[in-house]
Length: 211
Image (tube, rainbow, N blue to C red; front, side):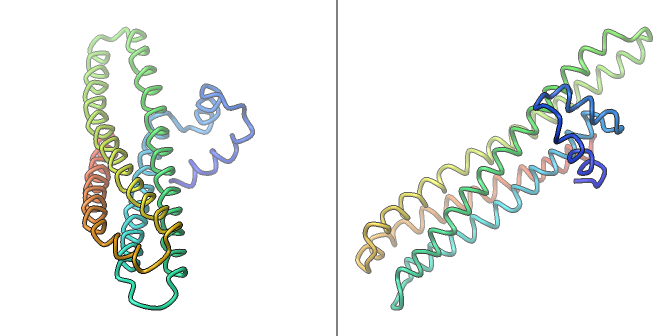
């Protein structure tokens, strides 16, 4: 996030929760919707990068549980529970950042489309319309990749949640042994999540470079 964008966000926090008021305030600082969109795409990218690391950490902690071989099982379980909670928070941040991208993108494209009718120079209008069409196409690829990444969150969270709940009420070596078969499933889900996140991050970079 640019320093100017961050400063302006702080200055408009006192405004009513109205998109038009927010955009108007940002424009007074010289920040247009396309600038806001670029910053929000970067924020989503950062959230996905952090999310990848968090889910890998959770996987490693689950592996330490199923590999448990003596010691304090409750301590190991508590670490897993903490990693699961952090994973839920990371997933919520990713979802929030994607929704923020979608909101400003829709507003930008609506404004851009409406302003095409204001042109008197038809050559400039056609050029702007072509740029809008190309930007929409790049955005469609971006949001599709981000949505696939978002969808990859639920299988990992659901499996982690199930195993954490099971251990919470069955905290013994026998229960741990029964979960060993779950490791391969969670490992595959995390691999799929990381791959989807990487694709979304790469698409984000391409989208920003084309703006």
